[in-house]
Image 1 (tube, rainbow, N blue to C red):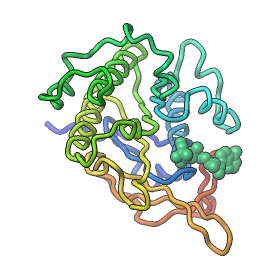
Image 2 (image 1 turned 180 degrees about the horizontal axis):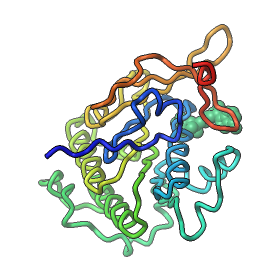
Image 3 (image 1 turned 90 degrees about the horizontal axis):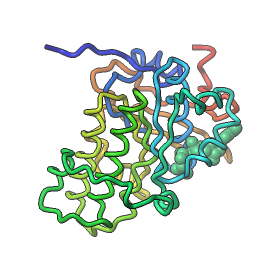
Image 4 (image 1 turned 30 degrees about the vertical axis):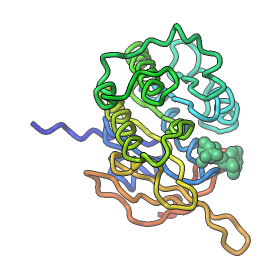
Length: 263
Ligand SMILES: Nc1ncnc2c1ncn2[C@@H]1O[C@H](COP(=O)(O)OP(=O)(O)OP(=O)(O)O)[C@@H](O)[C@H]1O
Ligand SMILES: [Mg+2]
Protein backbone atom coordinates (compact mmCIF):
# COMPACT_ATOMS: atom_id res chain seq x y z
CA UNK A 1 0.00 0.00 0.00
CA UNK A 2 1.26 3.48 -0.81
CA UNK A 3 1.14 6.18 1.79
CA UNK A 4 -0.80 9.21 0.69
CA UNK A 5 1.20 12.35 -0.01
CA UNK A 6 -0.13 14.93 2.39
CA UNK A 7 1.44 18.37 2.04
CA UNK A 8 2.60 20.43 4.99
CA UNK A 9 2.97 24.15 4.37
CA UNK A 10 6.48 25.53 4.78
CA UNK A 11 5.00 28.70 6.28
CA UNK A 12 5.98 30.67 3.17
CA UNK A 13 3.00 30.64 0.73
CA UNK A 14 5.10 31.66 -2.30
CA UNK A 15 7.40 28.72 -1.74
CA UNK A 16 4.50 26.30 -1.24
CA UNK A 17 3.06 27.44 -4.57
CA UNK A 18 6.33 26.52 -6.28
CA UNK A 19 6.66 23.12 -4.58
CA UNK A 20 3.26 21.51 -5.23
CA UNK A 21 2.04 22.63 -1.81
CA UNK A 22 5.03 22.35 0.50
CA UNK A 23 6.80 19.50 2.27
CA UNK A 24 5.43 15.98 2.29
CA UNK A 25 4.15 15.03 5.74
CA UNK A 26 6.55 12.82 7.65
CA UNK A 27 9.65 13.86 5.70
CA UNK A 28 13.00 15.25 6.77
CA UNK A 29 13.83 18.52 5.06
CA UNK A 30 17.21 20.16 5.12
CA UNK A 31 17.68 23.92 5.10
CA UNK A 32 21.31 24.59 4.42
CA UNK A 33 23.36 27.77 4.18
CA UNK A 34 26.06 29.98 5.66
CA UNK A 35 25.81 32.11 8.82
CA UNK A 36 23.15 34.80 8.55
CA UNK A 37 21.50 33.26 5.48
CA UNK A 38 18.06 33.12 7.14
CA UNK A 39 17.96 29.46 8.21
CA UNK A 40 16.56 30.09 11.70
CA UNK A 41 13.99 32.52 10.30
CA UNK A 42 12.91 29.85 7.79
CA UNK A 43 12.42 27.44 10.71
CA UNK A 44 10.36 30.04 12.56
CA UNK A 45 8.03 30.49 9.59
CA UNK A 46 7.49 26.72 9.59
CA UNK A 47 6.72 26.54 13.32
CA UNK A 48 4.52 29.65 13.59
CA UNK A 49 2.42 28.73 10.55
CA UNK A 50 2.02 25.26 12.03
CA UNK A 51 0.89 26.71 15.36
CA UNK A 52 -1.64 28.88 13.55
CA UNK A 53 -3.05 25.67 12.06
CA UNK A 54 -3.08 23.90 15.42
CA UNK A 55 -0.16 21.71 14.38
CA UNK A 56 2.07 21.81 17.43
CA UNK A 57 5.77 22.46 16.90
CA UNK A 58 9.04 21.73 18.66
CA UNK A 59 12.24 23.72 18.28
CA UNK A 60 15.34 21.74 19.20
CA UNK A 61 17.89 24.48 19.87
CA UNK A 62 21.48 23.33 19.60
CA UNK A 63 23.35 26.57 19.10
CA UNK A 64 21.40 29.76 19.79
CA UNK A 65 19.48 29.36 23.08
CA UNK A 66 15.66 29.38 22.94
CA UNK A 67 15.32 32.70 24.78
CA UNK A 68 17.51 34.42 22.16
CA UNK A 69 15.63 32.82 19.26
CA UNK A 70 12.36 33.96 20.82
CA UNK A 71 13.69 37.47 21.41
CA UNK A 72 14.87 37.79 17.79
CA UNK A 73 11.61 36.30 16.48
CA UNK A 74 9.46 38.77 18.42
CA UNK A 75 10.09 41.50 15.83
CA UNK A 76 8.46 39.58 12.98
CA UNK A 77 4.84 40.14 12.00
CA UNK A 78 4.11 36.39 12.25
CA UNK A 79 5.25 36.23 15.89
CA UNK A 80 2.51 35.39 18.37
CA UNK A 81 3.50 35.14 22.06
CA UNK A 82 0.33 33.17 22.82
CA UNK A 83 1.86 30.13 21.12
CA UNK A 84 4.24 29.78 24.07
CA UNK A 85 1.49 30.00 26.69
CA UNK A 86 -0.67 27.05 27.73
CA UNK A 87 -1.87 25.16 25.77
CA UNK A 88 1.60 25.45 24.34
CA UNK A 89 1.67 25.24 20.56
CA UNK A 90 5.41 25.83 20.26
CA UNK A 91 7.82 24.09 22.63
CA UNK A 92 11.54 24.78 22.75
CA UNK A 93 14.20 22.39 24.04
CA UNK A 94 17.57 23.82 25.02
CA UNK A 95 20.38 21.53 23.89
CA UNK A 96 22.91 24.34 23.53
CA UNK A 97 26.23 23.99 25.36
CA UNK A 98 25.05 26.54 27.95
CA UNK A 99 21.82 24.56 28.30
CA UNK A 100 23.75 21.39 29.13
CA UNK A 101 25.17 23.01 32.22
CA UNK A 102 21.67 23.60 33.49
CA UNK A 103 20.76 19.97 33.14
CA UNK A 104 20.46 17.66 36.04
CA UNK A 105 22.42 14.65 34.73
CA UNK A 106 20.21 12.27 36.74
CA UNK A 107 17.10 13.50 34.98
CA UNK A 108 18.51 12.46 31.64
CA UNK A 109 17.26 8.98 31.08
CA UNK A 110 19.32 6.86 28.78
CA UNK A 111 17.11 5.54 26.01
CA UNK A 112 18.44 2.01 25.97
CA UNK A 113 15.75 0.72 23.71
CA UNK A 114 16.20 3.27 20.97
CA UNK A 115 17.21 2.10 17.54
CA UNK A 116 20.04 4.55 17.64
CA UNK A 117 21.58 2.23 20.18
CA UNK A 118 21.64 -0.45 17.54
CA UNK A 119 23.16 1.97 15.04
CA UNK A 120 25.91 2.68 17.50
CA UNK A 121 26.49 -0.94 18.39
CA UNK A 122 30.02 -1.63 19.48
CA UNK A 123 30.44 1.89 20.78
CA UNK A 124 30.89 1.78 24.55
CA UNK A 125 28.49 3.76 26.73
CA UNK A 126 30.24 6.94 27.69
CA UNK A 127 28.56 9.95 29.32
CA UNK A 128 30.63 12.33 27.26
CA UNK A 129 30.34 10.63 23.89
CA UNK A 130 28.29 11.78 20.93
CA UNK A 131 26.21 8.57 20.70
CA UNK A 132 25.20 8.99 24.35
CA UNK A 133 24.38 12.65 23.80
CA UNK A 134 22.26 11.78 20.78
CA UNK A 135 20.45 9.05 22.70
CA UNK A 136 19.50 11.57 25.35
CA UNK A 137 18.42 14.22 22.89
CA UNK A 138 16.34 11.71 20.97
CA UNK A 139 14.76 10.38 24.15
CA UNK A 140 13.74 13.90 25.21
CA UNK A 141 12.41 14.72 21.77
CA UNK A 142 10.34 11.54 21.60
CA UNK A 143 8.83 12.25 25.03
CA UNK A 144 7.88 15.81 24.15
CA UNK A 145 6.47 14.70 20.79
CA UNK A 146 4.16 12.29 22.56
CA UNK A 147 3.23 14.57 25.44
CA UNK A 148 2.53 17.67 23.38
CA UNK A 149 1.28 15.95 20.23
CA UNK A 150 4.01 17.54 18.14
CA UNK A 151 3.63 17.46 14.36
CA UNK A 152 6.50 19.74 13.30
CA UNK A 153 10.11 19.73 14.46
CA UNK A 154 12.91 22.17 13.72
CA UNK A 155 16.45 21.13 14.63
CA UNK A 156 18.59 24.26 14.70
CA UNK A 157 21.24 23.24 13.73
CA UNK A 158 22.52 19.68 13.43
CA UNK A 159 25.87 21.21 14.38
CA UNK A 160 25.95 19.86 17.92
CA UNK A 161 27.87 17.03 16.34
CA UNK A 162 30.72 19.44 15.76
CA UNK A 163 31.43 19.64 19.46
CA UNK A 164 32.73 16.10 19.38
CA UNK A 165 36.00 15.19 17.81
CA UNK A 166 35.94 11.97 15.88
CA UNK A 167 38.91 12.92 13.76
CA UNK A 168 38.51 11.76 10.22
CA UNK A 169 35.90 9.14 11.00
CA UNK A 170 33.26 10.70 8.75
CA UNK A 171 31.62 7.30 8.22
CA UNK A 172 30.86 7.03 11.93
CA UNK A 173 29.37 10.54 12.08
CA UNK A 174 27.35 9.81 9.00
CA UNK A 175 25.99 6.64 10.53
CA UNK A 176 24.99 8.47 13.69
CA UNK A 177 23.42 11.33 11.75
CA UNK A 178 21.44 8.85 9.65
CA UNK A 179 20.30 6.99 12.75
CA UNK A 180 19.33 10.17 14.56
CA UNK A 181 17.30 11.61 11.67
CA UNK A 182 15.71 8.23 10.88
CA UNK A 183 14.60 7.88 14.51
CA UNK A 184 13.05 11.34 14.44
CA UNK A 185 11.30 10.62 11.13
CA UNK A 186 9.84 7.48 12.70
CA UNK A 187 8.03 9.69 15.24
CA UNK A 188 5.70 10.60 12.37
CA UNK A 189 6.51 14.28 12.34
CA UNK A 190 7.62 16.64 9.58
CA UNK A 191 11.14 17.86 10.25
CA UNK A 192 13.13 20.89 9.15
CA UNK A 193 16.76 20.19 9.96
CA UNK A 194 19.00 23.21 9.69
CA UNK A 195 22.50 22.61 8.52
CA UNK A 196 25.62 24.67 8.14
CA UNK A 197 28.14 24.44 5.37
CA UNK A 198 31.43 22.66 5.86
CA UNK A 199 33.84 25.59 5.61
CA UNK A 200 34.09 26.90 2.09
CA UNK A 201 32.61 23.71 0.63
CA UNK A 202 29.13 23.67 -0.77
CA UNK A 203 28.08 20.49 0.96
CA UNK A 204 27.03 19.65 4.50
CA UNK A 205 29.16 18.15 7.22
CA UNK A 206 27.71 14.69 7.73
CA UNK A 207 26.25 13.65 4.43
CA UNK A 208 22.81 14.62 5.69
CA UNK A 209 21.82 15.83 2.22
CA UNK A 210 21.60 12.19 1.11
CA UNK A 211 19.36 11.28 4.01
CA UNK A 212 17.05 14.27 3.63
CA UNK A 213 13.93 14.14 1.47
CA UNK A 214 14.42 17.72 0.38
CA UNK A 215 17.14 20.34 0.40
CA UNK A 216 16.60 24.08 0.41
CA UNK A 217 19.79 26.05 -0.11
CA UNK A 218 19.94 29.60 1.20
CA UNK A 219 22.82 31.81 0.21
CA UNK A 220 24.07 35.37 0.06
CA UNK A 221 25.89 36.91 -2.88
CA UNK A 222 27.64 40.24 -3.07
CA UNK A 223 26.57 41.99 -6.26
CA UNK A 224 27.81 45.52 -6.96
CA UNK A 225 28.30 46.23 -3.29
CA UNK A 226 24.93 44.86 -2.27
CA UNK A 227 24.08 41.61 -0.52
CA UNK A 228 21.59 39.56 -2.51
CA UNK A 229 19.75 36.72 -0.76
CA UNK A 230 18.86 33.66 -2.80
CA UNK A 231 16.97 30.41 -2.27
CA UNK A 232 17.33 27.34 -4.43
CA UNK A 233 15.68 23.94 -4.12
CA UNK A 234 18.31 21.38 -5.03
CA UNK A 235 16.17 18.36 -4.21
CA UNK A 236 12.59 17.55 -3.25
CA UNK A 237 11.71 13.88 -3.55
CA UNK A 238 8.32 13.06 -5.00
CA UNK A 239 7.68 16.69 -5.88
CA UNK A 240 7.37 18.80 -8.99
CA UNK A 241 9.23 21.90 -7.82
CA UNK A 242 10.71 25.06 -9.26
CA UNK A 243 14.29 24.88 -10.48
CA UNK A 244 14.65 28.65 -10.45
CA UNK A 245 16.97 30.52 -8.14
CA UNK A 246 14.62 32.73 -6.16
CA UNK A 247 15.62 36.11 -4.75
CA UNK A 248 14.32 37.12 -1.37
CA UNK A 249 14.86 39.65 1.35
CA UNK A 250 14.39 39.50 5.08
CA UNK A 251 12.18 42.24 6.47
CA UNK A 252 9.66 42.59 9.29
CA UNK A 253 7.54 39.88 7.65
CA UNK A 254 10.49 37.49 7.67
CA UNK A 255 11.48 35.83 4.38
CA UNK A 256 9.85 37.79 1.55
CA UNK A 257 10.33 36.86 -2.11
CA UNK A 258 11.00 39.78 -4.41
CA UNK A 259 8.86 38.61 -7.33
CA UNK A 260 6.06 37.07 -5.27
CA UNK A 261 3.69 39.94 -6.12
CA UNK A 262 4.05 39.94 -9.87
CA UNK A 263 4.26 36.22 -10.59
N1 LIG B 1 13.74 42.42 11.12
C1 LIG B 1 14.68 42.20 10.22
N2 LIG B 1 14.76 42.93 9.11
C2 LIG B 1 15.70 42.70 8.19
N3 LIG B 1 16.63 41.72 8.27
C3 LIG B 1 16.60 40.98 9.37
C4 LIG B 1 15.64 41.15 10.40
N4 LIG B 1 15.88 40.23 11.34
C5 LIG B 1 16.94 39.51 10.91
N5 LIG B 1 17.38 39.95 9.75
C6 LIG B 1 18.48 39.38 8.94
O1 LIG B 1 18.49 37.97 9.15
C7 LIG B 1 19.78 37.54 9.52
C8 LIG B 1 19.69 36.41 10.52
O2 LIG B 1 18.91 35.38 9.99
P1 LIG B 1 18.96 33.95 10.69
O3 LIG B 1 19.11 34.10 12.15
O4 LIG B 1 17.79 33.18 10.20
O5 LIG B 1 20.31 33.41 10.05
P2 LIG B 1 20.92 31.92 10.17
O6 LIG B 1 21.09 31.41 8.79
O7 LIG B 1 20.12 31.13 11.12
O8 LIG B 1 22.37 32.25 10.76
P3 LIG B 1 23.26 31.38 11.80
O9 LIG B 1 23.87 30.26 11.01
O10 LIG B 1 24.29 32.37 12.26
O11 LIG B 1 22.38 30.92 12.89
C9 LIG B 1 20.44 38.73 10.14
O12 LIG B 1 21.85 38.65 10.01
C10 LIG B 1 19.84 39.90 9.36
O13 LIG B 1 20.59 40.11 8.19
MG1 LIG C 1 20.47 30.35 12.98
